[in-house]
Length: 308
Length: 312
Figure 1 (cartoon, one colour):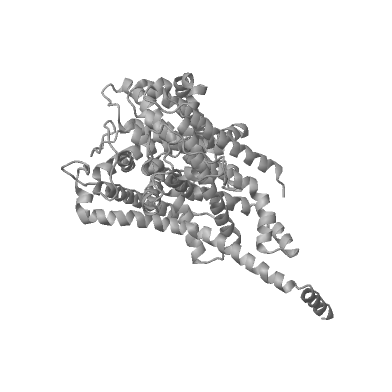
Figure 2 (cartoon, rainbow over the protein chains, first blue to last red):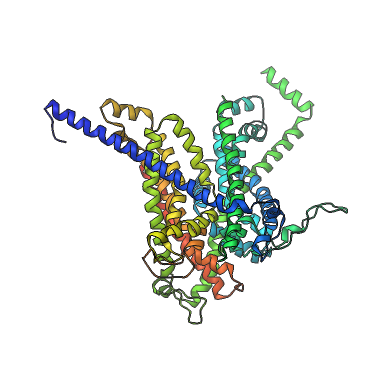
């Protein structure tokens, strides 16, 4: 720093710094605008390409060799069933694990290892989960290239998301609530199940929705387990007409999902199929945006309504 | 004293001892379920490592590690098979570098703007918008790269092939901007207000405060955001698999088609390789390489966070 004595020089320096301030302000606005406009351009392009293909037939037809009559029936049914398996597996395990780490875990080496490990798992590329599922679920446990294997692979993938959301939601509940419950003679689990879980349910739900929205769009792990891309039939129905009424045959059925269907159409050279890809992309983006939007809305409501 | 024994008597009379015993068993049972689900994360990590190691060890019985690391060709499915990981690594490095050149500066500038300059309403609108964009499936970005950005780039560079690393990298960069800017902004907002107030009181401008006070104070969070961006770029699969072509190609030129580690795994998975063949084992060796790269970055991030964490 050079010393400044003259008042004019000080003014000059101040003006220079103010100019830099303004330059950065403009840079920031321009950068934000560039990002927003780029995203707009990308999505508008897809909207223009894909919108004409979106009709009821598109949702109720199987994929086909003729692009005009191809649809996403088997893809969205497959996505729904895979998500069902993912949710059933990831939700109890994720919440259980979050509750343990936040409320039960003693402060020791093991707890610290588990915590570091959850962060590391969140950083593992999704395709690695695909390789795990290929080796473990498909071959070692013999599930085959089925809905069950895919659902479990995605459940492992979103487990860290659910765990972190559960922990944050529970952590934000003040200690006084726990002390009040214990003072009335509640056990630890009674405190957790009657107070902590209900109060943090909105936060946990937000995490679950964000996790499932991520799982819906995941393509790489499902390709890795070797899911077929051309499926022109539906898995067996989970509801039966005769006695047990419920059937779990669909768990082992071959399947396709929305992102795989889209990938399949994108990689075809014919332009007509690429229009189908744009339409499938629109449906996929609409699904994930709706889910993420719901999560953001829930969080906003929660922040507004809860005052401890 | 008398009171206490009286209480005890009531409990015994009501036969509560059995109840309390059952209650303790119940509590123990639930606690062990919760512990098991928490311990599952370690089991998953171990399972990933074991699965990758198991197949990779068989792979390395056929191919020496030296060849794997130094051979300049990756043609495991050809008659003249070469198993050099370098072409896949070069594809991964080039596409990730392009992505980071886009995402880190843009993400940082947007984060500084949102955290230090933007009026309240713009920030409240931009945050959910960034989060929404973070949720868009990567296969959709692959579509953008192949069918929107590549034709656009071909107007500028007419000799650009249909599959190339440049467009895949650019789109990947755009895709990562929301993650980087959202996390960087969170880190900067967590810096306490009185540091800024101190800086303003000394006559610093907003830009000086942002660069010299807030950013150094938020360094550990910003480093974590950057590391997350890097491991996203390295592990990203669908954009490169769709837009960069799947030919392994030892090149540093972004205008050429090339395969990344992840794209190779996709390419093999799309085919029909029998379980237990050497081709099947190659994807596990490739996966192990990828896991090691991302784990190294995760560890660097962890160390940076620990070392530079500021506690206020």
